Image (cartoon, rainbow, N blue to C red; front, side, top):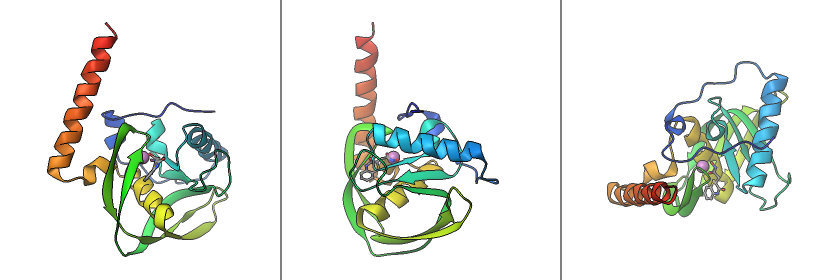
Length: 172
Ligand code: GNR
Ligand code: NI
């Protein structure tokens, strides 16, 4: 089932997600729905809080296809090692019509559980490393715009407010 993706400034996006304690069929179904929602969007990743579920589950596929290709499902993901620096343009399904460069680690090692409850380790570089950091941020209630300089963040907030006002006026 495809879910609605919550967008800025929905306060649900700022809440911290809780660890998954038992991997049930409901958790597996949620992960499948998240993947379906990500491919439909389309996006290269999705975190559970983006569909209003505050559990530590992320899905990622940076293959650029609109169907499962290199699908990663990570439950309770933790960055255990990171190195290097990169500064690439990011977007977010929860922040439509806006993109900006963000400083990230160039490579990360992530540990977590797969949908069968097996411990997994992912070694990620480039876009995959960025996607892991972006999705794990969502689990902490952090959006990529929270990493911007105060000046850029202010410009973003003004643009978002103006767009919201224009949309509200159009609805009248
Ligand atoms: O689809 C997405 N593209 C993207 C591009 C650059 C850096 C991060 C991302 S993640 C984003 C999907 C999304 O919002 N996931 O939370
Ligand atoms: Ni995002």
